[in-house]
Structures are given as C-alpha cells and as structure tokens.
Length: 261
Length: 284
Image 1 (cartoon, each protein chain N blue to C red):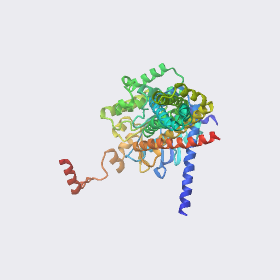
Image 2: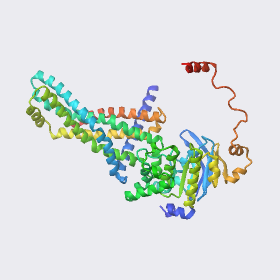
Image 3: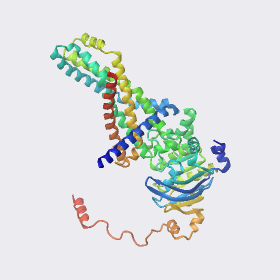
Image 4: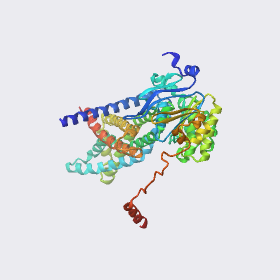
C-alpha cells in the first residue's frame, strides 16, 4: 500500500512539474510576440550566449575533432580504410557530437549564467519591481533568451562542426599522413543535406530545452525548498546545469531515433 | 466592460484613495494579517507603522498587487483591485510608483538606464529624450553625477534615492515606499524625508503610502498613520492623535519603551564551557 501511495504521489508530482514546465514554455513563447522593443533585448542575449561562448566552443570543437581524428585513424587502420577518416569525423560531428557538445558547453557557460542572473534578480525584488512597472518578467527576461538561443545555437553548432573537421584534418592529414584530397573528398561524398538538417534540428531542440530549464530554475529560485536566498540561487544554478545536460542527452536519443526511422 | 473601471474614470470619481475592507493576508500556511480595515486618503502621506515582523511589508505587497489577499478587499477609487479583469488590473497598477526596500534597481543597467526603463519600455520616445528625462529626475534626488554608475557601485542611500527616481519618473498618482529611511544615517534619512515632502509639494494630488518604523520620519512627513498590531489595525488617525493617545501600547511604541522594564539579558548567554572554548580560540 505504501508503495502505491509513493508511486501515486511521485506520478502526480512529475505531472505537476511537467505541466508547469509546459506553461512556462508557452508563456515564454507568447511573450516573444507581445513584448515591445524585443530586438535590443535579443541582441544583448545573443551576445551573452553566442559571442561570449565562442572561444570555448572553438576550443572544444578543435580538440574534439583532433581526438576523433586520432581515435578514428587507429580504428580504421586495422581495416585498411583510413581513407574514410574524413567521412567518419564529419558525420560524427555534424549528426551527433556537434549539437550535443555545443549544447552541453552552453548549458555550463551561458545556461548557468542565465539561472544565476534571473535567480539573483528574483531574490532581490528586481523581478517584482519589473512587474510593478508593468514590464512582465517573462517578456523582459525569458522571451529574449528563448529567441536568442534559437538563433545562436545552430550558428555555434555549425562553428563547432567546422572547427572539429579542421581538428580531424590536423591529426589525420598533417600528423598521420592521410591525403588531403582523400580527407575532404570523403567528407564531400558522404555528408548529405539530411545529416546537416538532423544536426540543425537537434541544436534547435537543445536550445529550447536548455533555455527553458535554466530560465525556469532561476525564475522560481525563491520557491526552492532546499535553500533560501543566495543558497537557493546556487542550488538552482547547479540543478539547471545538471538537468539541462541530462535533458540534452535524453532528447538526443529521442530525436535521433525519430529521425532514423 | 463598462467605463466605470477605467483608471481615468476612477480617478475623476474618487481620486486615488485606497480602502482596505477586512483584509486577510499572508503566505501559504501562514496568516500574517488577520483583519485589516483602513483608509489611505487621497492626496495625503499615510505612514504604515508597526513592530518588525508585524506584516507591514506583507501589506505593501498586497497593496501593489504582487500577492492576492486570502480574504477581504483592497479598493482603489471604490473598485475592488483584485476583482478587476487582468487588463484593467494592469492599467491601475501602471499608476503606481514603488520604492522597494533596497531600491531593487536592475543590476545590469546603469542608474540612468534604470530610471528611464519604465518610459523606454512603454513609450516610443527617442533615446535622447529618455536620457534627458532620467537626468532631470536624477537631479531631483541629487544623483545626476552618478547617472552612469551601476547599482553595485552606489551606497545603500544612493540606491534608495535611485529607486525613488525610477518610481516617480512616470509621475504616478500613487507612490508606495517600503522602509525608505531604514539603514540610512540621520542626514541621509532626513534627506529622504525631505524628498518625500518635496514630492508631495510637487504633486499635491499624489497619494503616498510609506511603510516604516522610523518614528522621527513619521513625525516629520505623515498626515495620517495606520499602526499594524497583531494582524489588525492598532491605530488609525492623524499623527497628532497618535501622539496624544493614552493607550498603553501606543505610548510604549511612541516613547520607545521596551516590553519589560527589567533588563532582558538577565544572564550571560554563554556558559562556562563555551567561554573556555572561546578563550582557547582567542589564545591561538
């Protein structure tokens, strides 16, 4: 009986959480269309999410590509097919690692900043001050971040992919001696528009997921039961990053499986 | 919807007087204010007094529409604030200026940007005019030279004055101030009082609600006082009537007499074990 009660309350709480996430999401999207003077707010957020994350994305992309080139070479050499290294690196990056690693890096860098900033604004009455000035917090803080993330994620993912392919080139061609023409020729022959679309769709889904989770954690930081004040903001930030990373990986599986059908 | 609920119509009919009818308010699982019935006259400064933790700030949150009452009504110009459709509720709230306890300035904006924020968000005025208006308002509170400072670069008193500048930039008919003088030195506190009196002179029809426990400030600025006590109204009337009251509690409150005539600290709070541990730590 106790197990049933526990299961029932767990299911209700899960439904409640999912419902509140959905309402928050719809409200955020609605405010994209109803908030005045959206452009400057979105540009500001694009700078925070995109430009300020560029260096880390390039760095991670480069080393991911270099490792893929190295690991791929030593697997392919066993089968005498090192000529496929370009195809292996590019397909892995464009379809899988590019969108996933970009989203995880952005959750750690931009997502945590979003949660912390909104959370601090919440506990210091700044969001209440906005509401009283008839400036909805959802429109001023959340909607621009949704839109900025949707615009910036695919761009950063593309940069990650290109830099990663260049990293694979550095190890495969410059270090291990595969022909340059073979490396890039295989990429051109094997990478299709469908692969690029798959990566693009994934980056959009991850953008919405990460922004939704990080903004919501900050927006309701004052309601957390595991802390008060600054501690609540710290806990919200940790939760935002962890939940975002898990959600990205789960969503990656769901999107991949639905697109491979 | 009839024109009765239009803010302009309300203003024309009854001014911006505020009336509380059997207000019950608090937070989930905790009632802080049990039964508050009071009047905040239009065009006057009303001070809400009370002991720390008596629910003054809770009352303010309800007055500005950030929390819904558990029961009872808050009437603006005779209309139940929380009974209005959302669009009208927001239109009424646009007429409020609110000074939060620590100013609640947005940390990512400069002082001038903070002050210009409500105008910038709700109007299509050019940036130069917004800046000029912000500077004029900052001049009023003595912060013109700090227009390009961020809130974390300002002192507590400056943040409060900055918050006041943002609250008055839309020339609201109702101004709420939460503890405007708390944490300020006597000179800055007096300057804040003077600013509120200047507001009153500049906008004679403005309804000012000041939540405070600063008696010197109340004596200087208030026309009307509401004292919150044990979740209800302990006193409502003029400052003179409050000063003249013979009620024992009010006398203690106004004359700053503690609850117990005996000292509260009858024994040392640390016992011998704690003392010796402290001594050991101090020797290290």
